[in-house]
Length: 479
Image 1 (cartoon, one colour):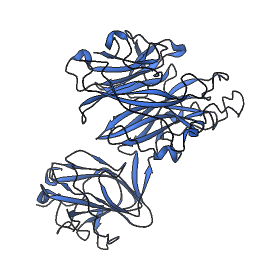
Image 2: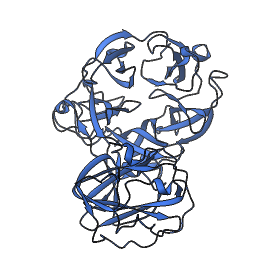
Image 3: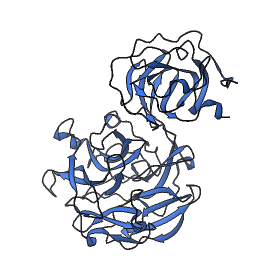
Image 4: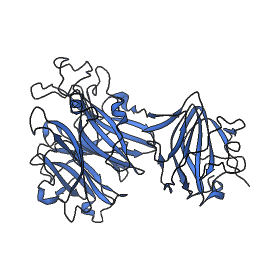
């Protein structure tokens, strides 16, 4: 018996928009990896949609969840627990804490074995590529000489530095130093701060650099610089408007997310002395995301649009002047958990130092909700590039709470396939689903099309499209 589509769906009897044939596009590899709409990698054509940044929800009513430390640091979800590495107050080293719910953390131990220089930064990752359990955890830290060091550990608490504790880079690296394994590229990446202009002078400004190394165990110093860059789209004078303070890379379904601390209007303390209540707009630090497919050429749209991933808090908030992200994002229980450090005063300068309090906060985001393709009053369409269908069904992350959604299937040339046309498609009304499996008049899944080159065309009105994924289970096995 044919599986009936959900009762919330009705036949698309009136086509929202007769979309034009999809433009020419080379086939892409999709497989069964989730496809995000953070960029146009999978998009051939789109009409009447805009790309919008997702909105986070601050946990604990916007108040801190941890007040005994701050970042630069990391939160990971591992072994059924949230694990937190945090910078202890007064540059007294790094601590380690755990939590069952991600909100209430219990201090467990002090980090040991790393020869910090200044205790500024510790960025921790779990290296799924490592076969030796003593190297399962890896970390970047600030080594002597204002350079980057790297270390390994079996438990994330007791560490052994690589390279005998000596730096593995040159100057300057006193903010986040992050090492991580890139499975697609089959190499390790290292991100550190670097500087432009006269070293140590008043005209020096901050930048960031990325490096690669195929095997850190064989040679922890064999880092090849891929790129060093600073904000200069508006010329060198842009440094007075913004500087990249720190950057780490979070890899999610083949997309690289730059977690950027951006120092805005650096050194401009014209608003006056310390004020722990009033929110300031200059000499502040905001958290922006950038996206890339190669961890090198970052899309900085949200920076130049002035749209932080986690907005700073209002007057009186603990995070009103500084928001600095953890080095990684946690994905758990169908949410993204964005931990961050907040401060209630500006950055300050060597001449003007503001007393401020630091703490750690948490914001969450719907699964895949970083960026969406959004349609409003006018019906919109999104058509993918052609790909070989390596599965029997498709799951779509879509929010049409107050709108409509439908999906048709086309051949590689952009011609609707019989039985999967817009006229056959089910229109979903007032639906919000992380894994919606579209249906058609006489088809519950894509099994008859498996192995063919196809395109998908999504129809949206008052809806937000986040991602899709090809899966192998036929619809008849889903109940």
